[in-house]
Image (cartoon, rainbow, N blue to C red):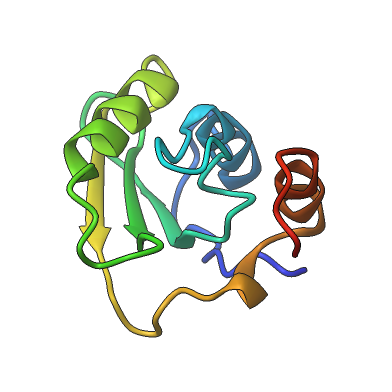
Length: 119
């Protein structure tokens, strides 16, 4: 499946979009136990230059349910996962398009099957 990630423009820092996406695999949805990248919850990622040298990561992310009360947990995990790679993390919670199982990567589907889900 393709990743709906924007390529940064005008950025010469050390962290790449691919490296940040890989680090975001350490952010796990607390309800499903699968990382947010493989669940297809990351809709976009932009790395913007900052005065400190490291970029600012702006992440467009959704949740499996708009009623999920765990946004703070996911935000904390994202900050921890990207610590040292970026100078700041900003998460834009987006609800359109709504998340659906079609957004799960092949790796995410395999992980869910191992947990007993039929996807």
